[in-house]
Every structure is written in structure tokens, then in C-alpha cells.
Length: 191
Image: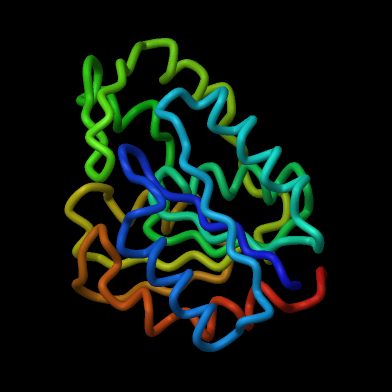
């Protein structure tokens, strides 16, 4: 595996801390890795299409790392394509928990304003997939996640490789320290 796709969360971007950490860590420790960090729109339909295009552009079978809503997307891609993925504080049933974001929303990094509509939530519900191969998923949760209830992911991904760390936050404070283990997991041969 020489390709990794990092999938950022809702209202985030390739400028996020975790995205920059993956790129910097790979450059320093594994310069052979090609790290792809697409800038996803808020609308889930073009976001997933962009991720599919990114997947096609990879020269090798990629490993996926997804954070928050990016974890939701990573699960979908892993299910569709039989890939391995690391999900970091992933969103579970985002159509239920994101209704508070209806209306105009500003990206935390780019400051681009997007309109979030009920149609976005319907598509997220439509896209949702139970993992057909939970053994190909590494799910990293911190109990101090102030945005998403980690117990939903703990239950949804119960048959996956689960690592639950007390404390922390939605940002997953121990992320950079977990990158060697994430790469090792993603590099394993398919089961």
C-alpha cells in the first residue's frame, strides 16, 4: 500500500490539524506514501463522488483514514470496495445528529459558506452502510468527544477493531501518536 486517503469531517478541510499531521508524518516517516486529502463539499453526493474519483486516481489499493463525517464516508468506501479503514471518532447516523447544522454554515478553515438542506440529511441516511467486513475497520474513539457520543460508534462498530481511550475530545487528542499503528493496520493484507 502506497496510497492513503485522509477524509476530513463536516465543515473541515485539508487544512485541519489531523490532515496536516498525516501529511507531515508520512513525509517524515514514510516518504513512499502518497497521501490524498480531497477538499470535500458539504453536499454528500458530490463529496462521495469526489472520494470515488480520488480512489480511482490511486496507483495502489489505498488505506482510508476518516475523521468524524469522514469516518462515515470511509466506512461507505470500505464497504463498497473491500478496503481497510481507520475511523477516528466517526459519525454514526449523521442524518440524526447533524440537524442542528441546517441552514448556512461556514467552513472552519476556508470560511466558505454552504447551505445545508434537509436533502443532505436524506442522502446521508440513504448512504448509510453497516460494515460487511468489520474486521477491516480500526475504530478509534475518545470518550471525551464533545460533539459525538462515542457509545453510538462503540455499538455500531462492535465487531470491528475498537480502541476506546478515556478522555480526549472530538479532535482525538492522541491522533499523531496512533499513526504508526494506523499505518500498520491499513497495510495488512485483506482478510
